[in-house]
Image 1 (cartoon, rainbow, N blue to C red):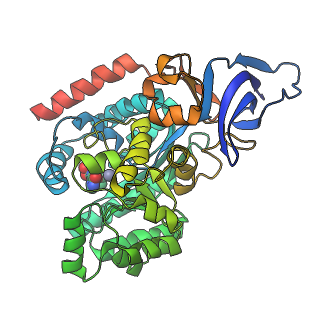
Image 2: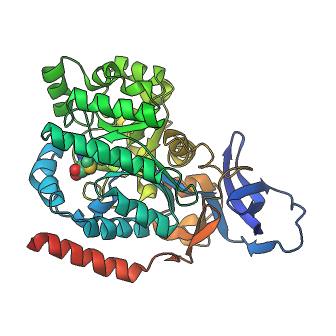
Image 3: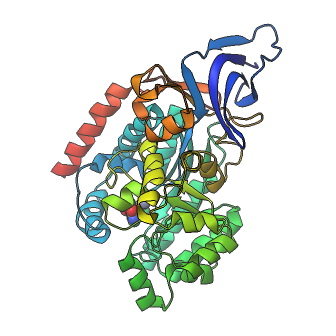
Length: 432
Ligand SMILES: CSC[C@H]1O[C@@H](n2cnc3c(O)ncnc32)[C@H](O)[C@@H]1O
Ligand SMILES: [Zn+2]
């Protein structure tokens, strides 16, 4: 049965050229936005109404890189460089992760993301059926992939590849279309070239995009040059990676030629400023990437390197650090930063019908309470959302037309149970 409802007297962040915000109405039918505008549309009998006064409606935030189950390792390895952090802290603990750990760790992250206004997340991890189960049950939209590290014997590599293919086939388009999949070798420094080529071939066979970590640290770039005689971008290009739609995470250390290769191949970049700062990896050349025409979106990375999944923080960091680094106060203006967290996120994870409040788009959106001191005066709501707001301002969240957060509480997940089980999982990991 069709369900129609009309939001009245709201403020809508439409982010269109010449008009960032519209005061008026938004009509939703099932999973789709049917109308956004100043005048009240004709509505059929039986259409519900929703009072939007005091609320700023915005597209749901899109987190384009992360490892949700790593919230179990939040605070477990702080103030370290990437390679030491991975080798000494993360990988030894992750080797002990069971399906149960991944389920509750992911659920913990999904609670944090939904309550903080994130309606879509990309996730690269192991035990991915558990991640898909959480996405299915919670109502969030998810772009999922079995991440594969190839530092293992060939028969184990083969198992990982087959599992990645099986997972991608099983879940693509599931959960009312909320789950899509990608193929994902972890990185050029953890995957031998022949292993990466197999993922590229599988992505061609399954008609799926590719995702990987790339050029996150100077050490990684140096190692790639020593092992393969090429910088990571040229190396992946040679392996055919960019012959598929692809999104790379980080892209911190890129030279001009690499930026040109990414632009020429329409490769999207997930910028993860919080994680890159915390691991002292550096600051990505976002302004140069955007000037070259690369779609740059935003990700949190896992909660063990961030240490939260707050997309407002990533949006604000994107708007701030590039001003600081360049000395140019117009670098990454507020509206551009917000687009990186919404519409550019949608483009970079190949979900073109999300990320915007407009007719025909999926009804994935949030409502923020603007009757608060840090939203006053009601001058520029886009500025306030980027420079002043945070996850606690998110009052309601809808994904695919369904309400998943109401007055700041999750409707689809038992948050108290998730917190208890996640704590128990962490204690179990410590004792094993
Ligand atoms: C194969 S599952 C994903 C794998 O990635 C690791 N990881 C988490 N954050 C980062 C990062 O910033 N760079 C590289 N790898 C990262 C995580 O610990 C898992 O092992
Ligand atoms: Zn990562």
